[in-house]
Image (cartoon, rainbow, N blue to C red):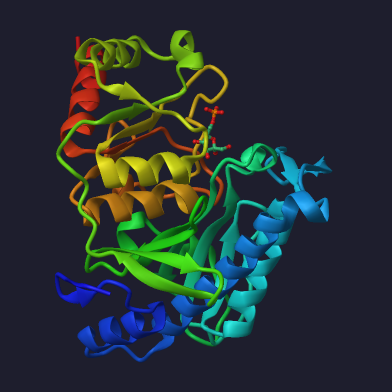
Length: 333
Ligand code: P6P
């Protein structure tokens, strides 16, 4: 390994968590244990994904989830893995998940709340495109030992104590922040360990990519079409994988903007505030970027319901500010 910044690249996740915990004088180790529980579930999901073609667990279950979306075998497997890991870990009082209609009450003595999209982009599994898990961690508002309440799970993103994603791809990664920078860990399956590979990630200033589903071009508002036309005129590259974590991760490392505006099919946007947008918004701000719903900072939105959707514009500050200025230009004649 070689020395880079203040951490040796190649530091195992466990050692890193311990070192970072020492930075928090009042840390009592529960958040560290919770991050370990998430990493464990990520390893198990990674294994299931890598074998899915052989185990015949690709494809749809033939039934829909609570969102009315076709549930893939791996959606259910991933949901079970994360819920079990968080249950066994004991640090979590309640979980909200894309795959579950209601709050999953886990351990009344738990200190934390987790919002999770266990497997985002799962429709890409069968064609071997990278997919991901997105998670947010909050301190519960209700009394430890008491019931988990709606207030516990409907917290604004600016209350997150940690957030991150797992990216199951050509190499699988865990990327997370505890509010003191963004750190990326690459998984070595032969050892079963995550090693620090991306130290203190900062999104490049360079406006490298724009990521949007241009198939919806004529369903977007005029301002969005105007922004897409500007991107084309500027000659920057279009990259859209159709898997949020993969698109976000590429822009985080190389510079760019991902956006999912409201459309006729998704008048509130397609992405979910609580378990997709908030985590990525926390990460991108920690990396020097910006995340907005077009009107306000994603992290300041007060959720009204667990599964609510919102439009999202996320990535380089300069690119997000530009598209917001066009949206507001049209909005205020
Ligand atoms: P569309 C996957 O279903 C997802 O939630 C994100 O991972 C992805 O960015 C988006 O939807 C793709 O949606 O409408 O462009 O196919």
